[in-house]
Each structure stands twice: as structure tokens, then as C-alpha cells.
Length: 173
Image 1 (cartoon, rainbow, N blue to C red):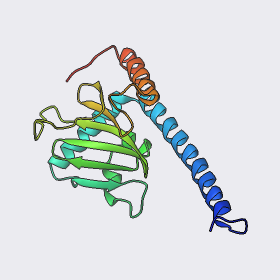
Image 2 (cartoon, one colour; image 1 turned 120 degrees about the vertical axis):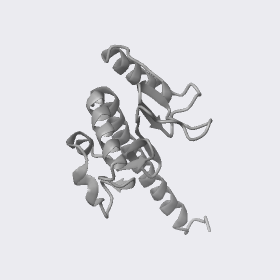
Image 3 (cartoon, rainbow, N blue to C red; image 1 turned 180 degrees about the vertical axis):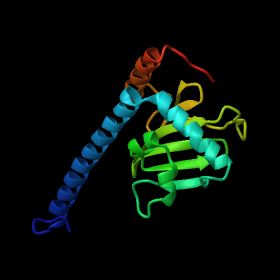
Image 4 (cartoon, one colour; image 1 turned 90 degrees about the horizontal axis):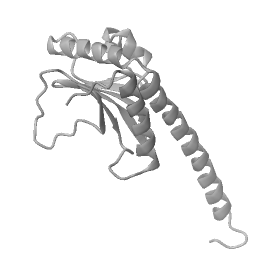
């Protein structure tokens, strides 16, 4: 194994190269989606639509739990979601008691928005609202966003700060 006649090193190098290219393409696609979400999406419309979904879930018109948008089987309830959420083309939307999560990515990269009802009460003291608040009741979350001074965190912070300024600097929670 590993000798001159072995195919393992060649196959291993080809696999690593393929996975590296796939990883770069995947992360660039997710970074583009992050940028669009944080810099271009109508966050007030998303907030309003999410509040409508939470009200429908509270009234029993939409089931709580996970609603797959991009994976099969797709949730039949997708048609009940407001157009603004469907147009985001999330991977899934998860409705829980008093909040919902609009998820993007998958595999090695998860990020999205969490929207909380006005009367939401954290179920326990260390409840994680998300990575970074954008406006009152609307949080961004990202598995690669951390308290350390990483390039990814700095990039996300710049996008969010620019967006908060564009929204009039309104913050809450």
C-alpha cells in the first residue's frame, strides 16, 4: 500500500481535490445566499410574514414542526406560507412554540433567520436566540458565526450593521 504501483494515493488525491472544489462551490453559494438574505431581502416583510405564520400555527391552521421546502418529500403546507417566505427558497422552515426558524444551507453549513412572537418567553435561562440580532424579534443564526474574531464573523457583522443602519438603526431585545 502506498508503493509505486498503488492507486490509493492517486485516488485519494482525486477525492480530496473533488471534495475541495465541491466545498468551495458550496460555501460560495451559501455566502451568496447569506449576502442576499442580509443585504437585499426585505426583512420587514419577512418579519411580518413570519408573524402571520406563527399566528396561523397558534390557531392550528399550519402544523408546528419542520416543513421541508427543498428536500423531498416537500411539506404540503408550503402553499399556506406567505409568498415572501416561499420566494426566499429556504431549505426548511421550523415552527416551534412562539418562534420559527427559516433555514438555509445544509450538510456542513447551516444559517438563517429566527423570528420570535412579541410575547415569546425563553423556555430556559440559557436559551439561544441566535447568533446576532438584526431588529427586534428577528435574529440571524449561523453555525460558523462565533465570538472569536474570525473573517466570517467580521463579514457578517459588516453586512448586518449596514442593514441596521439602512433600517434606521432600530434594535430591540
